[in-house]
Image (tube, rainbow, N blue to C red):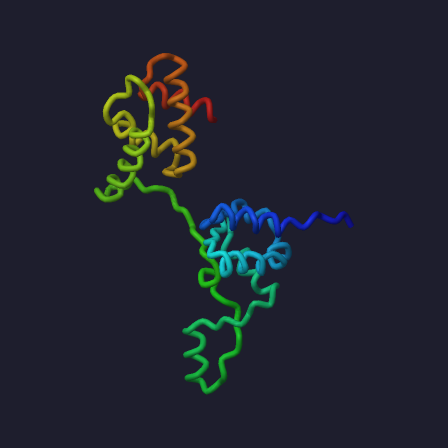
Length: 195
């Protein structure tokens, strides 16, 4: 078997020296539960000793981490509900598989809504307004993106990543064409280019 160099000490040094407080581990779905089970103690060390918050992202992240914890024999946590239920039945509480959300911070990102409720529409328009504030286009009209909220939501499904791609591509198109503004024309061109 090919052996990989152990990089934990250099990684520890960099994380500690940079005073890292958040570690984002993306594409967790590419790792098998067996691989994760081997490195979970290291992540626990980073969290407990260095005070680093760790966020795992990826499709099925909570399920994969749950499987890894079981493989790592980390069955010492007992959920409060299960403990109470067992005590009522007169049985001692045995270690059980922990709830995935109780183990590590896992965030599930849903698309931004643009429904009929005013609060939902307002949230999506606030996101668009924050993009508008960050765009450096010379002739950007006021509420340029907010005017096209329905179109942008339809084209991106309300997903933040897709929205970012469409808006940034539309801004690049606006710069290249010299319009320096985002209209439906640039949104259409960006969507066609990304498709």
